Amino acid sequence: MEIGILLNKEELRFLSMATNEKLYFTVYYVRKNVDINECKLQKEEVEEVKYFKIEELQELENKGLDWLENWKKITK
Image 1 (spheres, rainbow, N blue to C red):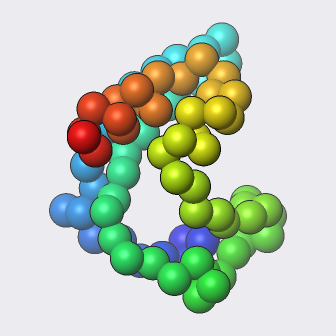
Image 2 (cartoon, helix red, strand yellow):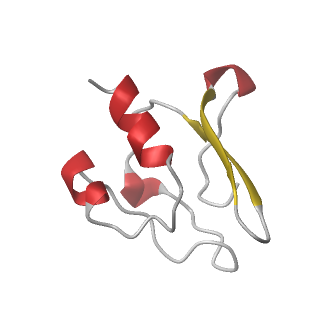
């Protein structure tokens, strides 16, 4: 409940898995209409919620994770 959005387990779709020196990541996605103005952020966990266009995400430093390439494949 880090951003106050309730999800059903059935809504989650696998996107990718990755590891680095310290962590193991499993990335899931959900397609859902959400008004980010209604999100209730858990301040200890989340600083900000923001919408991005796919083109804007490509410009972010993704720290070697390949989730963005997988995302592009499923959104074409």
